[in-house]
Length: 150
Image (cartoon, rainbow, N blue to C red; front, side, top):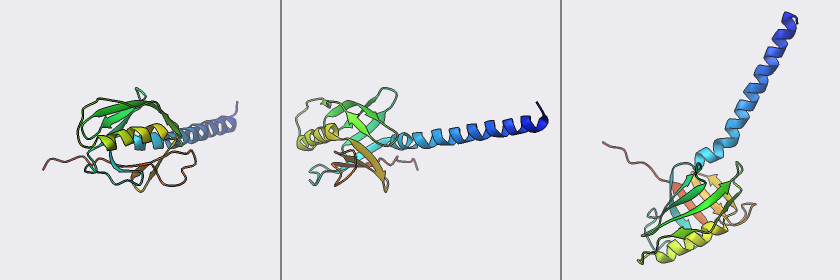
């Protein structure tokens, strides 16, 4: 093999690995953006009766589970999500503590189970009940801002 052929082969292999590596990072970017803690700020068209941010949500990709804390109950579900945001959530399970805010917790579970598409737009996580992300989102969440020590 000549030096010119070896240089060409090396360049082609380098381009392949560079392009593949960039593509792999780009594909997983959506899932990376889902990581962290989220706060529920809106459920469909209904204003929250509990203080926005009291209901939390997070994704655990290693376990394939998602969930959080409602106003007074914890909840969870198994889920799958693609790099394009297509998703499915299984039946939501929760603890059964009775308190104010249970209506919102119940609606959150119903809306999570209906979700077919996740979209991140303007730093908000939008849950849609159709795979085309048309119409109004059925849940809107915002990333929880970590408090810093001063």
